[in-house]
Image 1 (cartoon, rainbow, N blue to C red):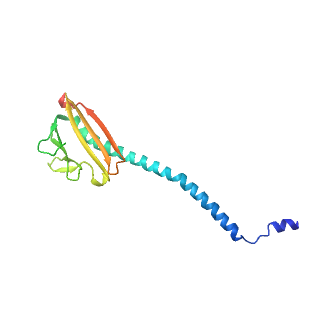
Image 2 (image 1 turned 60 degrees about the horizontal axis):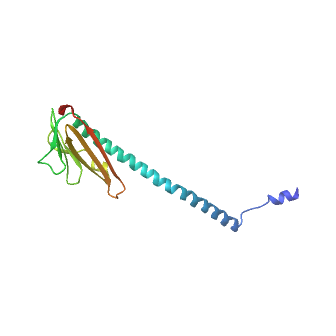
Length: 164
């Protein structure tokens, strides 16, 4: 019984034991951080890819809904390069680029408005091109970022009702 009391009769921790415990905790913390850092990179890439897909889906749904109702699509001579005109039964719609490289779309009033807000693009650059061949309209949307990390291109084709 006397030996049992001596084993559990420690009143504190020595400085050496404290330093050893701190070193062990530091090694464990660094190991966990080394495992989690690549996971953060994968998460960021997946999040960026989801954002890219959202941007492309939003732009394509707007343009393709206009294309679906088009009776004629052709380049717009009065607009900058890569601009194109979509003629529907109710109005003419021009897609072009402004000075900042944003895709702009003519509104019902004739004024140009951005397809998406500038903050929505962050550091991404979007280009849109349109080709028409034998009644088939092909819209190509490309998205790159300033860092060169993303370079995504999607192609959409439709045969507008009014052009068949």
